[in-house]
Length: 146
Image (cartoon, rainbow, N blue to C red; front, side):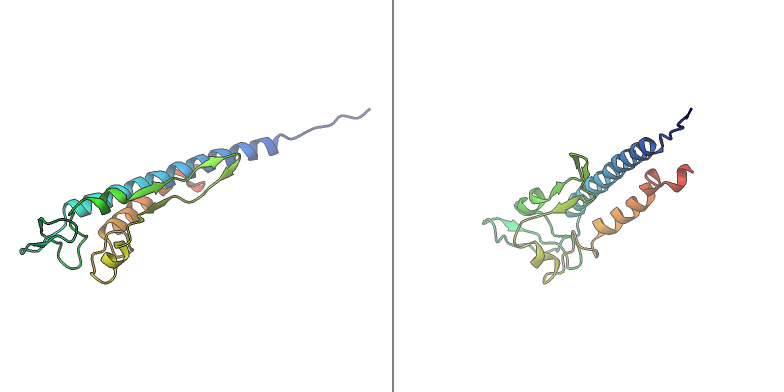
């Protein structure tokens, strides 16, 4: 006679990993959305120069932002181009990165040469988002539940 005693630890581990991945994805996407919103907010409320210039996009006058501040909105092209590629879980594979990006060619020029940070580590949006991410990180921490 033989009695087998089985553990269902593998099932519990798989369940825990699935739950942790779901929380990680949710966290990453919350942070990405927050970053996108912070970029938008910083462009809307940026400090502007007192002199207007002819817009390079239209024939209208435009008040550019002061150096060291996010770019002021002119045509809205840059503002509307900032998109999120969310973290996902498909077919059991978790993509553990979310992206906030723009494909507008002059974005790097604004950040670098013109010193109008809006997405880089030097930007207000990035700094605010980093604080937010650290604040909500406990939502996915394993240690907080042990």
